[in-house]
Structures are given as structure tokens and as C-alpha cells.
Image (cartoon, rainbow, N blue to C red; front, top):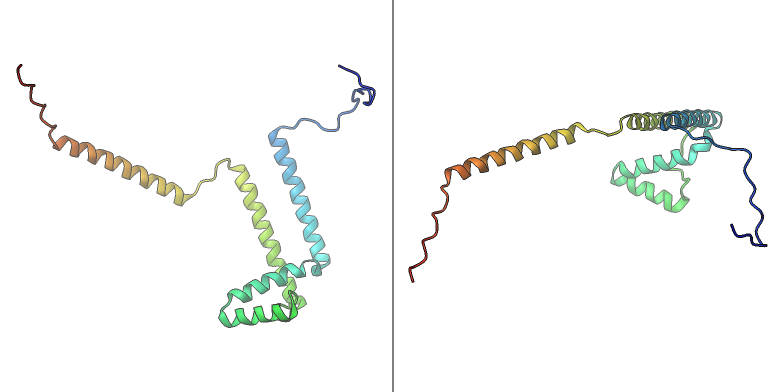
Length: 165
């Protein structure tokens, strides 16, 4: 190796800060850390529900906007006049607690779904499987019908011989 004056000398590492993990070890460790992070998040939200008040109010605003024309106009009006944290999407502490529980349930469902999808290497859908099966049946039916129709149609006659010279 060429030594240049502007660079430091090579120094061999005496410690290794990471180790090679198998895919199963990595997945298990990732799952453990994710579950721990969710528990910590839920605990923090239980201790201080006002941390997620903006999220709850934003969801309530979206619900009001989807509830109907009158509700949509009212929600948009108060949003334009008072801003994002307006009296239209205000939540009482009881409602905040209820919506917070719903939010945590959704997070748990997403985590469960993610874990299940990781465990199944390939996702399968009943609807997709039925569609594929139907396409295969149609393809085999059309292939057999084209074969049977080909059998009923006689082949074209051979061309006439060329005239003698």
C-alpha cells in the first residue's frame, strides 16, 4: 500500500461492535424491540393523553368532513376561521381517552398484521386465489373448445399441382 503523508497509518481493530446474526435472530430481536417500543408509547400516552391530542383532533376533523355536506361545511368553516385546533373538533377528556384507546387498538392491529405478514413469506388472498383458479378454468376450457372446434373444421385442401410445361 502506498503511504501518503497526509493520511494516518492503518490501525487494526481490536474490538468488534457487531456480530453476524441469522435472519431468524434478527426478526426475533426486531419483534422484541418493536413490542417494547409500543409498550413504552402506550405507557407515555396513558400518563399524558394530551400528547396525542393533535392526532385525535385531526381524525375528528376528518370524520366531521366525511359526515355529510352540512357537517363538511361547518368543519371547513371553523378550520378556516379558528385554525386546526378549533371548537368544531374540540374533544373533552373522556372523549380523548376513548379515542386514545381506539387509536391504541388500531396500532396493536397493525403490529399484529405486520407480524403475521412477516411469518407468511407470501401473502395469499382468497379472492385472488379464486380469480386465478377461474382464469385457469377459462383458459383450459377455451383451449379444449378451440381443440374441439379445430377437430370439427376440416383442413383446407392441398393446392393444385402446377401446370405442365
